[in-house]
Length: 461
Image 1 (cartoon, rainbow, N blue to C red):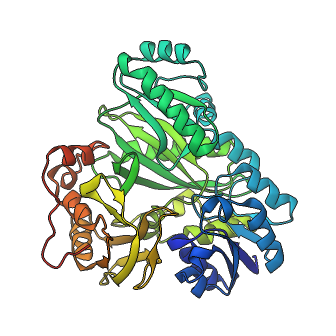
Image 2: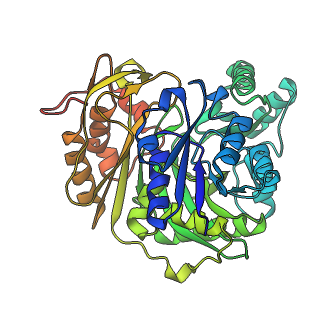
Image 3: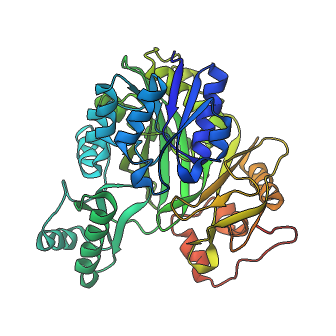
C-alpha cells in the first residue's frame, strides 16, 4: 500500500479522498489554488502545497504544477478525484514518466475510452447495444446533416472529448440541425480544445442509468449495481439513487454483465462507470464510460457497504481485488441530492458569495459530503457544487422521506447566495418521481408547469 498520496483536486471530493487515506494510514498532501488555501481539505490533510492562482487552468489543470508539487512533497501516487485532470491521458502518462502512480486507468485506456465516439464504436464491437448514430466523428456539416436525416429526428450532437454533461446539443428537426451542429462544435472547441463531434438518435422519454465497475490489474472485474441519474438540468445530474426504481432486476443485471464485458475487453483498471440510456420500451443503449470516480458514488457505497476510494487505492497499489461478483450484495435504497449554489428561478444561474450560515442535516443514516462552512467564500472560478446530501433506508419510500427531512434541516445563508435545496424537495414530491416514472425530461416538465419553487417553513436553502 502507498505511504503517501497527493490529492490533485478541491472541494468535497478532496476531503472525501483524504478521509479514506486517513483511515488507511496514508499521508495526504492536498494540492490547492490560492482560492482554496483555507479550505476544509487543506485543514484536514497532513500537508498542503499551493500550485497556482484561482483560475483552474493555472492550478488544478496545470500538469507541470501538479507534478512539481508531487515531486516536491515526496508522494508515491496521485489521486485526481473527478473533473480537472482525472480523465486526462497525457497527465496519466506524465505521472508514469515521473515515477508516480496515477490512481485511475492506464493512459492508453483513458485515451481510447475518453474519446466518446471511439468508446461507442469499441463497445458496439464487443456486443453492447448502441443507439443509431455516426460510427465515428463527423467533421463535415453536409455529411452530418445527411446522416441526421437518415437517422431521423430528434438527434443529439455530442463532443467526442466531452464530459460532465457538457458539449451536447439537440436538433429536433432538419431545419435546426446546421445551427445546433455549428454551436456544439464551437462549444466543444472552446471548452475541451477539441471540436470533433458525433451524432446519435435522441430519446425524448428515457432513463439515464449507469453501472459502477471495479477492475484490478489481473483481469478481475465486478459491477456494483446500477444508479439512476435521470433527474438532470442541462444534461447535468441533480439527484441520483440506487437501485433504479421501476426497472426489472433482469434488465439491470444484463446491464451489469454488459458493463463488465466491456471493461474486460478494453483492459480497464480501477473504478469506472458505464452510462446507459434506457428507452421507453425498456431497451438499454450504451452512451459512454467515465474513467474516474463519479460525483454520485456515495449511493453505491451506501447500498453495498464498499468504500470505492479504498478500492481505487488498493487496485492502483497492485493488490488483487478481493471482491468477486457473488460477494457484492445490495441492501435497501440510497438517494443523493447535489446542493449547488445556483438559483433555479433564474435558469440555475450560479450564485457565488460568502456563506454567513451553513448548517448540514444529521440524523440516522444521513451522510453529508461537503467542504462548506460559515465564512467560506463560494467563488466564480469553480463548479457550483457545495454539498452532497446522501441518505439510506430499507426501501425507497423511506429513503425519500428521509431525504425530504434532511433537506428541510439544511441552512445555507449568504449575501446573494441561493441553493437548489427547495427545488430538490419539489422534485422529490413530484408524482412522476415518487412513482418512479420520471425520465430525463422531468426538470424541464417541472419548469414548464410554471409552478414557482416555494420556500417551505424552516427551509431557507
